[in-house]
Image 1 (cartoon, helix red, strand yellow):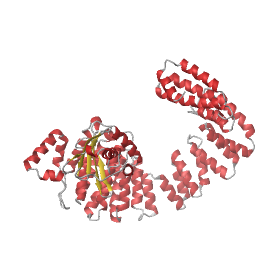
Image 2 (cartoon, rainbow, N blue to C red):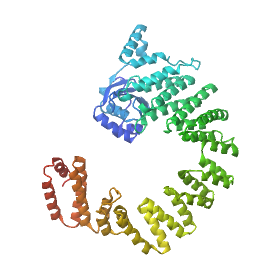
Image 3 (tube, helix red, strand yellow):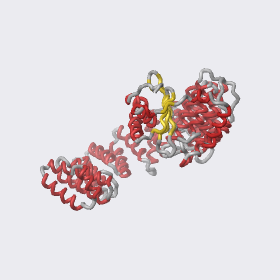
Image 4 (tube, one colour):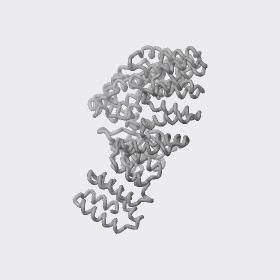
Length: 579
């Protein structure tokens, strides 16, 4: 090739995309998922077949020092650190001759006549109708004096990108969301911060407008796009040559994303926007944003708006932190429902009675948090009567635990034991049992208390809890007995903990537990279950060897294979496991 892409190796590729993406990219490379690979000067370009019907579009540019920049149209491809880029680079490393050398776009377009360009555009629009929306919005021009673009045109582009794909959203589709974001990036590169901000906000607004369509199980795709909008707005805000109007527009757009995220339940997509506002706004700008936050907080009067009010109150406190006196601080806390901040400030000011009154109005979970604050300020004992009253009716065991710890710290063991027993009754777990045991031992009554507890749980068929207790106290024989009993509780994998504990001193009993579980898995059928059964049988074999009972193991396996000789998949897995 006349313009070879600079040499790269696997180490450089892994450093660029990360080890996890590198390994996943290797799978894409081996499957031949890189399509139409091209070399354009110092840039590799291609499509990559991913999990969606439409392939992803990607490119990698290289400089004298190696990989310089990259991008992919997949949900996490911004910056080009994804598995698809890894696959592209591995393809180049393996077979550079498979890359077709093509002319750069700018000189290609420059040598075309106007009529040729018009014909090309018409062909593109005919093949991909979503491109027509691009004609509504003018491309960026040099300088900062360009007229403001119509935000609705970019909202329409974003909506088309969202709706254009199969299954509601095809990230790799032509005219996808990255094309719209690219318009914002181009405005930003031309220092046209006002128009860049318009584009980024338009995309973010459409993402939230179509929230139900684009928010998947973990929200990764939506977070990625919204974060790109926020980063672009952050660049508008921090640009050294930006003017006051552009800064205010960027701040307003960042606050709007923060507000939209709260409106849709607070998924954390506005957190970075909030951080940029607090970090980069000057005092005058913070006062302006505080006005927006106060207006939004006062409008959040619905039955389910408490979370939003608290969020607006929190940003208000941060925005006005340098100017608020104590009364103004407390007023914001009361108005927004920031109970923790309210009580903490009251305690700091020594207004203990007011703090107790606020605690009395708190819900049970809120009271648990406040208990920590009272303790940190050295007033835990003053809150104890309120907590003692609440635990008569609440199932919040954290309040019981807090009150128990208060008594225990003062050496009031009888009172602490009563609360520990209450916790044990609610939790029915080993940790609560250990707490009761420790306090009873310190009081010298454990020998009388323990048999009563065990008898009570045996009568209630709480054999799961009893098994944990026997294991904790080294009673292997009792654990082997109780683990086989039908229990009221579900203790996943408990039999294995018993088998592991019994392996050294009771290998025969441990082997029998592994056999029982293997038989259950085989009875349930399925290759994955057969594979797990083989794991248990392998451990069983090792235990027979430990007992020098190899002939007995051989006889068992012969009988086991014969009994299940019709299960070909099982026979295959047994052979793979060396059984």
